Image (cartoon, rainbow, N blue to C red; front, side, top):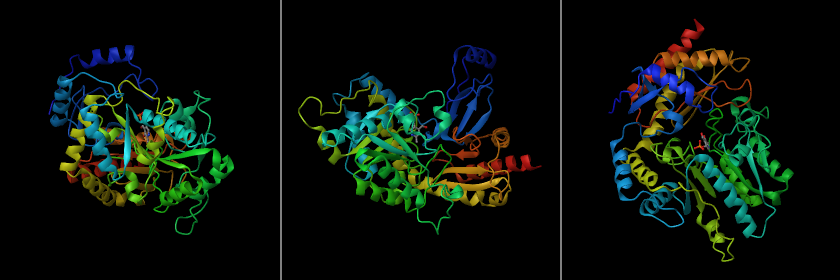
Length: 453
Ligand code: PLP
């Protein structure tokens, strides 16, 4: 472990932070946590406080912190060559593309980029160009879902279904339509799972028809909505959406930026539903965030239509750092660790154990619902179980800071709809031990008890 001492004293760091740093996604915070090191599932701040990294950073440090094998892979690769672009090819990209294919258990071409947002932009451009080259240029629209988050760039934000994220940045890209998510706890169609007719999937078909089926290129969805509140669909939802896509010739684009690489308890989230997507986007767990890298995997049959020789049929997209050698080498080392330590299987077990440990909380008046997708977990806080009125920001923040004061960092669903930011999230590293899971459950239980007393 590297318990690095900060080069500057805490006060000096804070002063410089206040002066120079613009933080992501938060009002300027004059007293941020300044993280200096990490070891396994634990991170240490500039005061020497240790916290359990209950969100794996931002849903990404799947293999935990301080992996020397990954650091060595990066070092060796940096010594070998600084950089070469992906208009050529290089050894780590070739090896990684093969490995991603084996994880996907399909036949895909891999396009590398830098971030999850990039990977989704690439998916949209490929889908539109594909239909152009297939002789259906009118197909340019995408269906997405309310509450989903697909990234911060204009196309990815257009696909995002959260008003608060878009506020003051609109107008965004045209051609993105949203449908309600399969949110059984608050069914948007007033139904109950078991007696419903999967109206949430029918809404996809209705949107395609209302938009005009021959104008729709694709639908983008996460296997389970993660950052938008851990909304896990019924088992039949994704297979039914796949059928609808087939019926109307619409591409199924799965955003596996969070669900991929073991988080769902399977290699990819869609493996839980035995569905074969046309395009899969991935990032975060691909490198466990040791280095930025994302990928867009495209069914090889689609790739065939990009082989025309007219000068405009190839995919005319480049990003300088996409497929960077070091990031690819890091990803390979990361995936080897996951394979050797069987972290996909561990993720499934973490989910089951968390479910068992959190079970007693289900009777707590402020717990509306607890939802798990593999080892990703959402705890929906309410004013009381009968009314299901979403807990207000004050209550949510009290639970989060109660966890923090007990050494556990948890997350909160991003800005979705005002009044509906009431879901705290957990996404522990896939190396979390049973003792650490007991610690997580204990900290959450105590934090909840302290707000009720
Ligand atoms: N898609 C999903 C499901 C995400 O959760 C995120 C980021 O959290 C993105 C895409 C965008 O990824 P990035 O932040 O790497 O651009």
